[in-house]
Image (cartoon, rainbow, N blue to C red):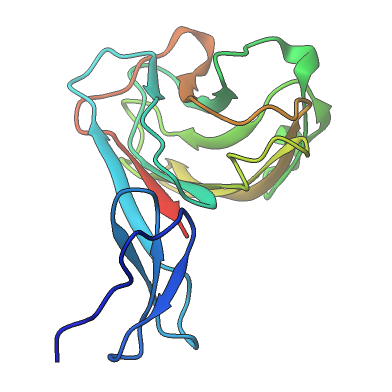
Length: 200
């Protein structure tokens, strides 16, 4: 049976289809949220693949969702390097606060002026880095923005580090751009990938 969507919907209006799926009007199209007992739908906004040599990737077409999710995989050209996320082009350290907890305790920090979203292996290390970052309520303009990350990477034949970071951008502005920067002058190796998803 074809779905009979409401005519002239308003932004964020919901509709329960005859197929048991909930849909939300995002201002231009009806987007599936899944069934009432399922997880919120994730939609791929953009997937970027490095050609090699980039120090940063900025996402600017963020869509109309509730949360943003970044997923990283890759390697860095020289040494093992941190990947930091900056919002709305703001790279001022005093505007960020974060705490990192990792299995390599020497790499832990508190009240850091940055948001750590993962650490990528060096070019000569095993090719394995994984990281994921959640940015909830990114379009809101009431609360400071939170970023929650988890990551893992293999920095040597016998060494693996895993960890989590919780951070704040001390600004209530809606997020319009998200940048993923390599620390310390390193660059992404060709084939490294960052995917941006929107979650309803």
